[in-house]
Length: 168
Image (cartoon, rainbow, N blue to C red):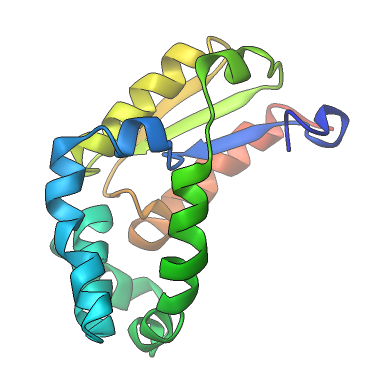
């Protein structure tokens, strides 16, 4: 949207965005998510969700999510897995965003990573820091890639400070 309608975007808060060129070139990400598709195809949606969540939010994701999300969150994820597997993931594989695209974005950028994020998400954070020299780069404590679930208060406070420092 910042490229297509820059007049409609005042600021960007980037919380480890899923950059395909980083994720899909990571051997670690490939290894950690390799079984997700097979579990899904075999009809084990709960197993697929669990494997994917471990890859993106860490092995202890359930404890953190249980503290911050309403009951039944896991079952809703399982129920919504078809959308992720049949729509979101294929779209992500087709999407491209490059340094040249980033260079066309002039808005203020918050680049936030979780202190406990996996290495492939920290790589995304580093790429974003390189692509956006105007970015405010920060590390959120007690958070994984799923920052808004693992440290929702910290994520909200950091974003609020960023937005307040760039008023409309």
